[in-house]
Amino acid sequence: MRTGMRVGVCGLLVLAASATHGADRGFYFGASAGQSQYDFDQPPVPVPLLGFLPPVAEIVPNLPLNPLNPVFVVGGATSAVLAEPVLWLPGDDDEGTAWSVTAGYRINRYLAVEAGYVNLGTLSDTRTIDFPPGLGVPSLSFHRELETAGPSLTVFGTLPLSANWQLYARAGMLFADTDLTTAFNGNSATSSFDSDATTLGAGAQYDWGGHWSARLEYQRTLDVGGDEVASSADVDSISLGFLYRL
Image 1 (spheres, rainbow, N blue to C red):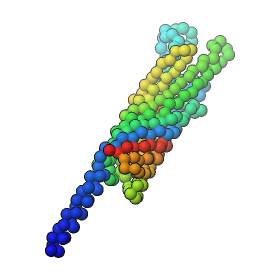
Image 2 (image 1 turned 135 degrees about the horizontal axis):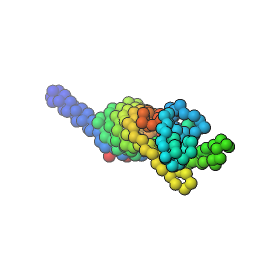
Image 3 (image 1 turned 180 degrees about the vertical axis):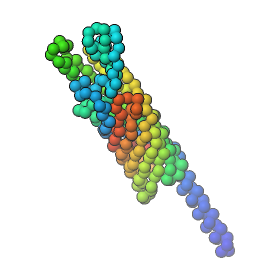
Image 4 (image 1 turned 45 degrees about the vertical axis):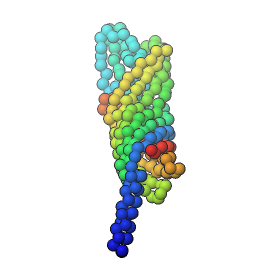
């Protein structure tokens, strides 16, 4: 009799453990929004040029002036300095509104994988370039916008604190596309830079009401822009998100 009871109890415990383990698995979907701040690695360019010359300029003969490239004429119409824009310089706007959408799968109560689309925010700035009076060249005003976005893939580790609260950390990659748009006299041109940026994050999650969860998270994305541009950036963001668990 006792043996039968022991077998029955063990069987119930196994079934309960299996049910709990199964409840920890599954898909979920979410969205978040918050504040981001870019921390640029500033290139060694002269500040009066306001960010339009790269570290190495090229002398190109017989090239017309194109402020959107931008190209600056040197020594008359027969030669010019061809310049590609750097990203951003000190004093430019460095804060934006970040947002993301995500889909994840819980492998167990401690581990999940997430795929999403992340927008690190849009920066906006207007600068005026004043040329020396002796050149007879009027001032030029440029408006620029910088936006970084792309798909992400991260691994998500969780530390449960109670039935409702948990701490978590994530690590993965953001496959970023950084677009720099320059507007001048009603015209605009966009330069795009791709980078594979490491993203790290940590936060707290609260589960309530069966299917819903809320997250407060800090993330840091490293080297957005990378070596292909004159300046790259680390981006810090703080966001509040909501999840729906299937």
